[in-house]
Length: 307
Length: 305
Image (cartoon, rainbow over all chains, first blue to last red; front, side):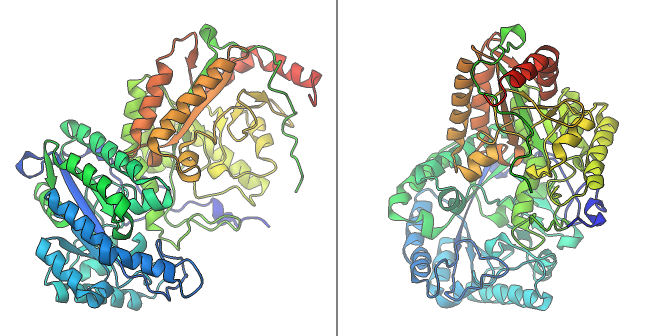
């Protein structure tokens, strides 16, 4: 067996990226931005409210956090549901204690099944961002285009109708997209995506990606990455949040305002034995000088005013 | 397939000809930032998938791109702060994609070595002409962009064929980072010319620490310090080599850069009689000049131990 000669051909070997979705740009060479009221750090807390169906497909890949055992995987189904019932209440209390307004990524199936959660989010003043229909319906390369359009429309229609919010942000289930996701999102009134974790600041993607804004919502400072995938404990998670804050904050004098994205999963960080550590680290952050708690739409709006 | 490519002979760690690095240093220390380009929609190699999800694998590709856009600055700033010149493990295609990064490394007199064309193109199943094309592309592209004649090689994503190591020697490479059998350089058995294995690392390599050992960033820094202490101790008997291989897409995150900085501060805080801070090429050239022949003779004399 030998490789076809095309394996050594590089049609996209050129300056910049090897695709048209966005342009290359080095973070340290951009114009500094200033956040409202002289803040140095925008603190963007987001959490996800997700519905994992028992009959989730495993093709083309299993969604992170999805079912594991043979059907019916009641163990993981109910563990995930714990987050929507119990864990989120603990997270909300901590956010309230420290005056944090967050972004809530919500599967539209959650809005239909548990309208109580939508009412609570609205009462708190948190931003709702689209998070697909449910965790069994991932967007992916090669999927049927009409199917993807329908999923995006269903998710946004349900979330907008049940919440009354504009819903201008989007986080695809599993942070997975097709080649067309960006275009379909902006055609449906979405302004920003949380799927591209390649930057520490917002940037606008190209027409091939619907000119959508990519927000710095990487998969790193995220309880599911650090605690579930990397197997670090809750104190080690909080140490990493602290170190991320310290490093980004230390860069603001030279480079201007920065964003610290902290992503929380109610069935993970909302556990009884973990919640006090979240309370400690968010309490520490919110008492630092020059911090601004904001949701994704607010951060992007402040950024765009200066872009 | 063969049970052993017989690239090197068994050579016990004790009783070797004593190596002393410049200034009497016991450890030759080098840092190898991998500056990599991962294609969003690469062609498929039958033996290894580039991405776990169908293209575009936004999650994985974006995480790699983070290193070039954002993480790179932090890594380079820390290395500047402690006066460490990098030996760049370079995906050669990146010269075309991101000349900005090449210029910054050139300004600092960093070394470049080849890490294949892209980290999403694997050597598995390449025929000899294809593998030669990779090496010739590497030599020409790096010479043209930097004026450097390539000295080192690390196969792209550590994918090899039976002939990779022989070809490196034939093309005049000085060292290979592909072999992990030792904490000192070793003459390699090649069909023509000379080649040494250069200690790189798959132990304190950031990707291994973070993704295989699931270490925390603070633990990563401590592992590096502990490795240095041990190699410094053993280097009194015979000089050792220590490499920190890293990737800006891993180490360069705000929650991780501190571990790397603390490790560099610790190592470079030692006297020059203890640690020689060098590049891969400098270590290889010093070894060829002073120890290659003695070590080759010792290996021949002690063959099999």
